Every structure is written in structure tokens, then in C-alpha cells.
Amino acid sequence: MSGLDLTLDPERQPRRFEVINGAGGRRHWSMDDKARIVAETLEPNAVISEVARRYGLRPQQVFAWRREARKQAASEESPAFVPAVVTTPPPEPTPTRPAQPRKRKATRDVGVIELEIDGVAMRVGRGADAKTVAAVIRALKSSS
Image (tube, rainbow, N blue to C red):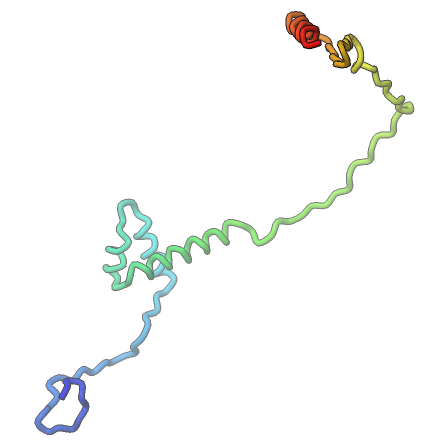
């Protein structure tokens, strides 16, 4: 027979009764108590496990309270919406004289030298290094 058999055996008398008075179940902590406990965990060199043990809590519960406090603080700091201000754009100034179209200068071909040696064309632009141009011309002549 196991110790968990519930039989009415007169030889086996219960040795101890435990009577639970009051409400059982979860404890309810006030917001002030939670805030005080969370504040203790935020002190320098505070160990959350020790603070939790001191109040008969599990560390996970204290961490959850801290997370809840952070969320609440973040929601209080940031507004739920940002007011929008709509204004009309300022009127554009009227030109005093009609705008003249700008004339484009043909700067692309100014100062450009074109060489063609045996069907190979070479363009030399402004500011090209003379030694480099001479070397390219020599290479073109030697290949033809």
C-alpha cells in the first residue's frame, strides 16, 4: 500500500492536520509597494535576486515590474500625438522683368584636338598632359 492511498483504515490515524486560514492564491501588491521595490532594484550595486527574496518574490516578477515601469515611463514622456500646424505657402514674388533664357556656351568642343591615324580617332581635351598625348600618338604610329 502506498502512502497516498486514501482508505479509511482505523490503524492509520492522521498525525497532523494543516488548517489554512484566510484567502489563498496570489498576493496583490499596491502600486506604491511595486514602485518602492522597483526603486530598490535601481540603486547602485543592487542585486535583484536579493531584493526579490527580501519580499518573498521571484526575480522574474521583479523584472516584469521593472519592464512595466519602463513602458509606463516611456508612454508618459512621449505624447500620444503631435499637433500639426498647417500654413499656406508664401506667394512667389512676381518677376520685375521677363526672364531671359540662358544661352549655353559650346564649351564641350572648345580647345579640343582631334587626331585620326589609320582609322583610330583620338580626342585631346584642354589641360591634357603633353607627355601623355605624345606617348599615345607614338603608340598609335607604331601600331600602324
